[in-house]
Every structure is written in C-alpha cells, then in structure tokens.
Length: 318
Ligand SMILES: C[S@@+](CC[C@H](N)C(=O)[O-])C[C@H]1O[C@@H](n2cnc3c(N)ncnc32)[C@H](O)[C@@H]1O
Image (cartoon, rainbow, N blue to C red; front, side):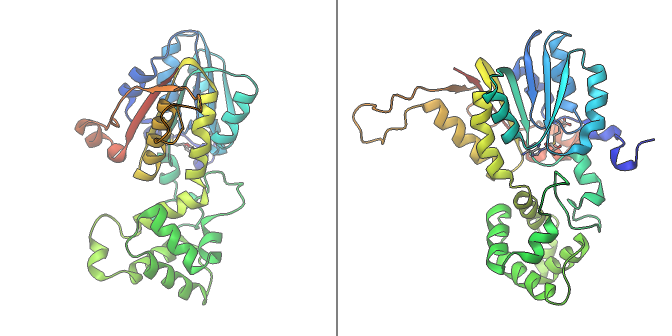
C-alpha cells in the first residue's frame, strides 16, 4: 500500500472552471496537449477525454509526489502520456527548443488541494507542521530557511509585495525578535507570532490572520511569479499557430502578469507611442479569447469554495 502522502484522495480531483477550460481549449482528436500544472490530474482527465484516443498528452509538475496520480491517469488516458518533472518554465523552454509544437497548453496556477490538505507539506496555517512550503521537496530553500535567514527588510517586502499584508513591518519585526531566542521550525510558531504582532481587531477580520503571510512565503519560496513570467513566452513558443493556451490564476499578482503578457503579445508592436510609424516590425502573436477574466459561477464556488478566487484567461496563437 502507498504511504498516506502518496495515496490519492477522492477530493483531490475537482478541476476548477472545467466546462470553461474545455470550451476555450477546444481540444480535438489527434492533437498534442500539455498540462503544465498536472496536480491530481483533474483537468488532464477531462482534456484527455476530448482527444478520443487519438493524440498525445504531456503532463508537467514540479512536485514529484503527483507521480501516483499520473500513473493512474496514464492507465486511463487512452493516448500516449508522458510525465515531465520540473518547473514549467524550464520544461516548456526545453520542449519549445526541441521543436515540440502543442495544440493546447493549460496552467492551473498555485498549490493543489492535496498540497494544502497534507499538513506535513507545511503550506497550511490551519495545522501545526514543519515550516516547509516547497512544491518541489528537493528544492534548496524552504520557508523555514527564509523565515530564519531573511532580513527584517526582506521579510517586510515579501509580506507586502506577495501578500499585500497591511501589517508587514510589524510581523517582520516580531519574527526577527522571536528567532533570536530559537529558530522557527513549525507553522504553528509562525501563526502565533503573526497573531501576536497584529492589532487584536485585525485577528478577527478578513479571513485567517496568517493567510496573507503564508501566501507571500509560498510565492517567495517557490519563486512563483518569476516562473510564470518565463513560462508564458515559453508556452507561446511551444504552441503551433492556431494552438490555444489557458491560464487559471488565484490572486491578482498572477492575474496581472497574465493580463499584461496577453496584452503585449496581442498588440505586437513595441515602438514608443509617440513614433508616427512602427519601426520594430513586431506582429501580434496571439489573440485573447476573452476580454475580461472568466470567474466561476456561484454554484461552482458553493460546491468548491477553493474556486472562489479563480480567474481564467485564454488566447489563440496567430
Ligand atoms: C492547482 S494545482 C493543479 C491541479 C490540477 N489542474 C488538477 O485538476 O488536479 C497546481 C499544480 O501545479 C504545480 N506547480 C505550481 N507551480 C509550478 C511550476 N512553476 N512548475 C511546475 N509545476 C508547478 C503544483 O505543484 C501543483 O501540483
């Protein structure tokens, strides 16, 4: 029997915005599909079904513990399927450089339900666990390293920049004070320090008081925004003309990167606006399939509260 950390749960597979993804990516038999964030394979299963036993599937994830989910997906996919372990930015660049051209690429960003639900991964403020948060457990730096080694200034910037945390400075100061006694080892110690650093009314306001700091640390530990910035052009390079890409993001920092990328590529020309004619000669390289980000329906959010902050943008390559 698999150890519990590797055992798939029934709730791991609920794919967010499933109908919308299916409609926008419009996968047809014979095509090549890349799921850049395989997770528990929920989206992969519905996209593979659209291939109707003809085509190819490539699954990417930087978390090697998704492997049992991939093995189970592969048995049912009906098409040849490969798993590529690593950061999607590196994997997509490599695939594009090797001449692969896909018809559909999906990004479903952030952490998976199974990463959040397994306390030993240290992503959740809801249970006391080792302070880790690495999506790839072999990565060099964990949240523990960051919390114990970053300067007060760096911590403040992380909490403010990646968590939009109002009490960033106070929390960073409290962390630095506490770690002088003993290094942080567990999520619970960090939660207690955050609670002690913010004014009492703020402890009972907008969600859990540690939510924004945990989000910020997770983004920093996994260098999520830099990966996304590199991955979007790499995905475009790995698409054939007419191929489609879709991105589901879960907070405004990610969505802003996606929106700007799509706008830039849709516009093409990079000449300063005061030039009377274009001299750069850059053509638009894609067309957005939706002007405004698509949000989940009320019914979907009621059934799956984690879908609540999802925003979907998609585009077709020119
Ligand atoms: C929200 S989950 C995907 C869930 C999946 N769509 C499903 O239906 O089961 C995001 C997954 O992407 C992976 N991931 C996040 N950032 C990544 C990156 N830069 N490179 C590769 N995988 C990444 C995470 O490890 C996680 O398994």
